[in-house]
Image (cartoon, rainbow, N blue to C red; front, side):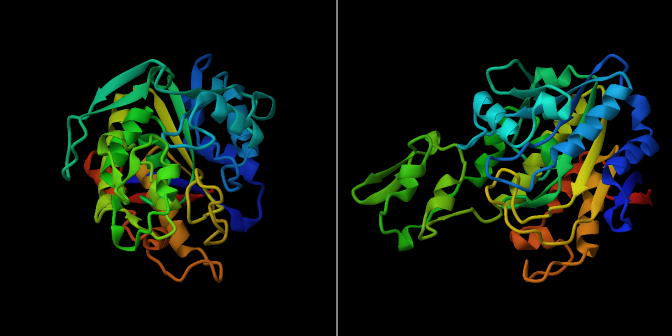
Amino acid sequence: MSQVLFFDYSKGRNPLRGIHTLIERSGFEEMLPNGGSVAIKLHMGELGNIRYIRPVFVRAIVDIVRDRGGRPFLFETVASYPGERDTKEKYLNTAVKNGFAEATVGAPVVITDDEDKQEIIQISNRINECELEWAKVPSLLLESPCIVVVSHVKGHDLTGFGGALKNVGMGCVSSETKRAQHFVNMPQFNNGDCDACGKCIESCPTGAIKLVNETVEREVSECISCGTCLFRCPSHCWVWPAGSKEKLQVYLAHVASAVLSEYKGRIGFVNFVQDVVPHCDCAAPSGQPVVQDVGIVFSLDPVAADKASLDLIDRAPIIPGSTSVSPPDVLGKMHQTDSLVQLVTAEKLGVGSLKYEMVAI
């Protein structure tokens, strides 16, 4: 059983002070390397998204690391789909516009892409029909002796929700590895209502979709499984394959397990259970909050941190008009999947425990 520390927003206390108390009470503060680099892994939000983690919270974590003699830097990888974060230059520009710059957060912002040095980590222990054999992880991340994984807990179209596990399994790897996971989600074409409007063809970033003899066709080898066609089709002719959301969660858990097993340093997981919106930080907009803001969770176990976060969401008051579903697994039900698949798989892989003791601070 793992320990999860919880700072409750309903008590009316200062959340910045709460972040300090969480890290202090956890003992993680003692693990921070004096003079060593500390990667603070987070998602800095797509341009136009307003529900990502507030920079002031990240600054509080940076200050804690610096006070202990560490050398913090904010770390992220480029997105594998089109948008304002699919190159280093674009992501850095988006980060600044969203409030993440060294002048504001007190630490440099580092974005990596597939051109940077990568380490290949073999995935030897595979269950639930996972076919992934390896994951590529930026060397820069693995060279850091300590990581703080800072996650915004929210809904996600494909995995039900995104938290600490997804922040590692999808956010800490190369675009190639991200696309390898998303391959199981390659949208399928149902031409029943297709009027050949060409929206999917125009929006496809790789030109994989073409109109041949007035019929939409796709070259699978050129598809990067970004789902742009699905979101842009006004007739809903592109659909997610049956069972693909659960399979993606299985792949995600395997990649997260590989990253965490190879990392030889110390890792802490901070989950912000607030602005719990239906969609990911990569969406713009990401929707209106589903429940009232809950608080902040800290654990050395990502599975326990995520499970506790989901349990807190299930116990939080639902905002009237935000959703018609009810607990348990509110976010999973909103996206027609069981969002616990990723956590159950990760527990079986030895990443962490679904059983936890919650300690309110």
